[in-house]
Length: 358
Length: 154
Image (cartoon, rainbow over all chains, first blue to last red; front, side, top):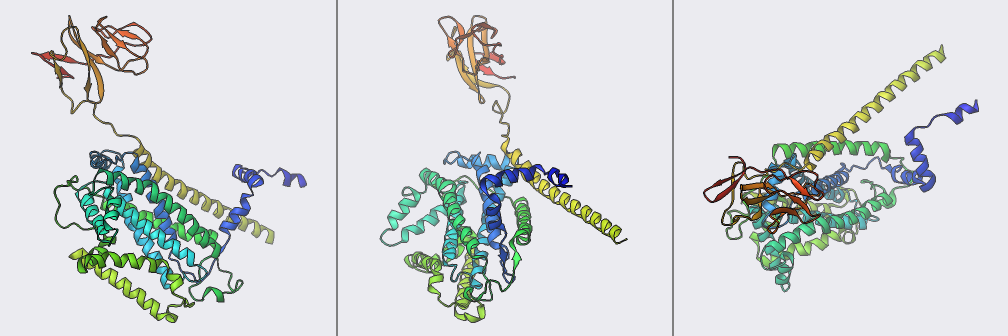
């Protein structure tokens, strides 16, 4: 009778896991990572996970693009053209990368808004918020540096205009402009500089900050949007198991995002304008939609004000959890902060639409 | 009776479980396949034309390659050695059949020489005369019009 138990065949996968577990105690690590609970009230809309998924998509499609892309002014444009029209599925990889960038910024901003309106940035999650805002800035940096790489007219002139605004910063403006462009104008040096930042500096920075961001989320678990952290008793509600319940929902969300990404990339593939010509500015140069509000703002106010306002606003956003000392998380109990958030959102939306149609 | 019912239920559960497992496996497999197919297609480099648009390419004149001389020229992305011999103009692939070095014209010996391992080729036929190359140099169609040397099929 006992023989039966001893001789029960174990699958190969099981034996591999046992082998690893015996040496590295992987099971306890996996248990600690997966077997946590999500508060029943928590509504994340899976936005953080979606942003993470889009980052993976950007990293993998980006690595594929570097296999054919050439970061010099003479060859960049033709290499992008080559990827788009000659390489099998090149148009798809490139369009997924372009659309993924847009969707990642959308997901990132929606994630930030969700955390803001649910008050999930409050004690004890202050640092998680700070790192999250850095992740947003890094993502915007990706958008800005990646935009130049195809080296077409739009890329060249959007970067010229975009970097020009750095020159409006008082005192250090000239130095900053030179530093970003690697010279007085957008040139070959700017291209290699942006390429290096886009493919080395930013990915490494993002991965590092992201790792800490996720570890911190794991340490706290998800916030309860109804009660401040201090009032949630540990054993009050059992919550939903993170694995497999929450993970399964998240996986479904990823599939939907992947489908949206591929559909967008197929129906509206990334185009290419004429090759960059430093001697001819095309009409109506505008930045990508996520910089349109800044662009419109710069048109409305004096240059110095326009540049210094976001510079001053960034620390406010970063330090929000330390400035907003109200412990309440329910929107009804913090009307002023919610009103401020809605107003800012409204202003950014109006400026974006205005910028689009101006 | 009760025991029998229990057996039927557990068998049904087993079927359902294995069906769901199969479905999950199928889902994962098709996801991986649908991602890998475009990625592998992308990784395989597309063909680039070897001659510029096919046809004949002017590579020089008999002034560049006088009698008894040879020269390596570019045909598309392939090197070709063109030789002006007593029997007329000849042209061969300049890639040594041994290990892929580029052969050159040895004016002193009037032979094609590979500098890597001293392979020697006949300038009329491309045949190996001495050294390690295992095969002759493949000929390239060449024609002479007045003083202009053209490579490739007409």
